Length: 83
Image 1 (tube, helix red, strand yellow):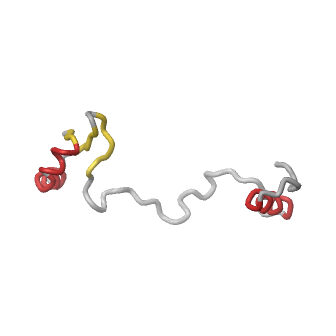
Image 2 (cartoon, rainbow, N blue to C red):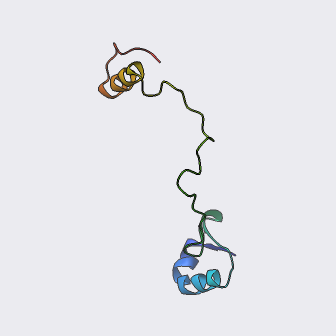
């Protein structure tokens, strides 16, 4: 079910009841969906370490050169080594 913001504001209790019954409720602004009401606790949560081995990173991510580049970016130092 899709409802516009004003209607959702006026019918919030009935929309929450619909979600509890298992219905999907989309909130729309000017007919364009912008949010979804979902049951609390139904969002999948990845356990700690779930991304291990799935994301590539440089082995020198914590080198002195990399740290100097980052420091230069924060301090606006134009003499910092280029990336």
